[in-house]
Image (cartoon, rainbow, N blue to C red; front, side):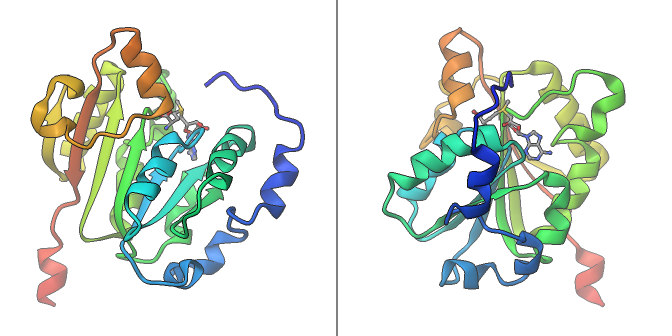
Length: 221
Ligand code: SAM
């Protein structure tokens, strides 16, 4: 993402009522932050927030958290959030590497990854949000039936993600390389800013849904 520095964005992160400060201190207690226990869903790399603000408005029975590391982008999501009268959406200005310090085992029902940065250089593969390193982090915080949903127009990143899912022993639950023409997977699809931009250029959108391997051995102990 080409970024313009937005003056005052960093300072706003420290005072905005929809940005949770010291998120690690809320580990295991996110229901208290929201004031009520509902399934908790994350979007990692939330960008300017169109996806998660729309989803939160549509699903008042779910608690949502948008995670974004860049203040200059997150500030745009906070502007959208301020226009909504909802009680089920907060944001964290945080690197996704911190998720295991921020959410307890089994605390998260679903993780959305939308148009994640591709990090095209091989030596940066661990930074890709669908790398086996990140899948291992997600596995630690996902509930028993927890899932990850991933959308991108980047075929190289999509192929890499499928390989990583297999290498990590995860289960691929659904997959399409042309979401907008896939009637079974496109139902209820909420478009992100990047999705609108790339699909309007004619790029097919790929989507997969996957889940960690079941912890049968652990359950039997
Ligand atoms: N999801 C949005 C969309 O589809 O329009 C934004 C996509 S943009 C290409 C990727 C976003 O992920 C950027 O805003 C970037 O700052 C954020 N991001 C990338 N790596 C991240 C990380 N490790 N932790 C948190 N955010 C990250």
